[in-house]
Structure formats: structure tokens, C-alpha cells
Image 1 (tube, rainbow, N blue to C red):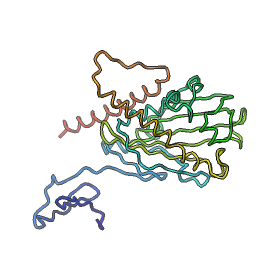
Image 2 (cartoon, helix red, strand yellow):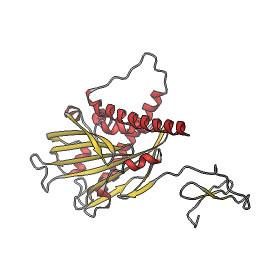
Image 3 (cartoon, rainbow, N blue to C red):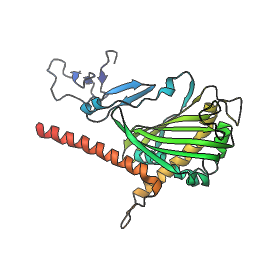
Image 4 (cartoon, helix red, strand yellow):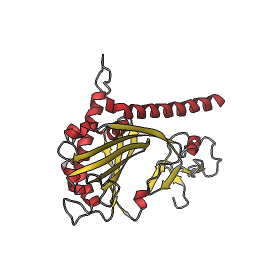
Length: 297
């Protein structure tokens, strides 16, 4: 409403930003019951994104959203996607992003090839601003780029540094750096910072958004008149469609009875297993504090 309150579309009760009811149209002359309250959720606008803390408000004070400076940096061109509704649990997307051994066969012929499966994986984890993160690192020399990467970033044979980092439950950051052999870190380097946000709807659905960020002065190889960011964004939907298909099928498989079944973990699953542990620890902490609060009442 004009005064900043939120009005219920059913009975017209109005609430302020603290969640307190301040008006009931059907009984304007009576005191407002104390139990007429809703739960407010802290929000923060930072680096071009709006963040919401949907859990215990007190816990929001112990962490800050991860920084993503490229979106507002004048040296970078940013192109974001429309929201994509995916019929799967959002953790499946995070696991998809952390374990790119699926680039073959799911993306074979565009961003993947069998050689990608041979690249060794390094792992890193830590904590920044109260957010526990887990990162995979893949480095390779004299690597023949898959077709889409060659189209986007000019070169055929390259050295590559590729990282996937779950920075928080809401954001995964992918950084790709490529250059002719021996030229990483020079002005010949190309690549992107690809941001993925994953917002749960319920246990079986989430919203996926991605944001492509490339240096403004970098042009694509496939069309030298088109910037790298625009070229990647125009073609990336094909890759996303393949991932969305896989996530939907995974969710369908989860619904089947699993008598006698247990997950088979591969060496490349180390990061996603650690991500699961981080989420479980966060969930237990949230639920534990909730139970303590109830007991105190």
C-alpha cells in the first residue's frame, strides 16, 4: 500500500514491516488482537540481487550474502536469464553444478566431451561472511575445447582453469578461464563468471536463474561482431535445457520405491557429498534453536 503496509487481499488486514497487524477494516473500533501477526523475513539488496532470509531471523545476523561484484562492474557485461521453473528439488541443481563429470555424455557436442571426464578434480572449502562454501577446481593444459567454448572464446587448443563454488544455499558461482597454452593470466585470457541462483519452492520444485558475465571488450569467436556475453547467452539455453531434463528425470526416479537400493558415490562426488553435510548441519542448527525457543515459551 502507499504507506508501506501489506494488505491481505482476502479480508483487508494490514501489516507493517515488523509483521504486526495495524488495521482490520471489518472492526475499526476494536483493539487489534495480539495474535494478529505474520512472520517478517529480512531482505537485502546487494550487488544487483535481492536476498531473502527465510529461516530464523536471529540467525540472519551471523552471515551476509556472498558478494558478486561483476554484475555492477562497468568492465563486465551481464546478461541474466528469465526465471526457469524446474520440477526437482533445488539440491539436485546444486549437485549438478558441483559435479560436472556429467559434461560427458549429457552435454557432449556442445560444452562437453569425453576428455573432460579425465581432468583431475581438486577441492576447497571454507567460510566467508558466515557462509560455508565448497569448491571444485579443474585445471588442464593443451586441451581441445568443445564446440561451444571454441565458439564463445575463440581458441581451439587451450590451457583451462575451471571452478564451481557453492557460495551459499542460494548461489553457485562458476568461473571459467581459458587461453592459448602458457597464456593464462595475460591479455589473451578469455572466459566468464557464470552465476546460478537456486530458490526452492517446495520439496519437488525450484526456480533457477543464471547470469552470464564476460568482459565487455571480449568478442566471440563464432561471430566477431557479437560480444562474448551476448553470444554465450544466446546459446546457453540449449545447455540449460539438457540439465533441466536430467534434473526432472532424477526427481522422478527419487519417487520410485528403492527397496535394497543405496547410492553409488564416485570420486567426483566428493564436493556434492560435502554440500549435503553443510545443508544438514544448517538444518539441524535451525531446527535445534527452534525447539529451544519453544521450550523457553
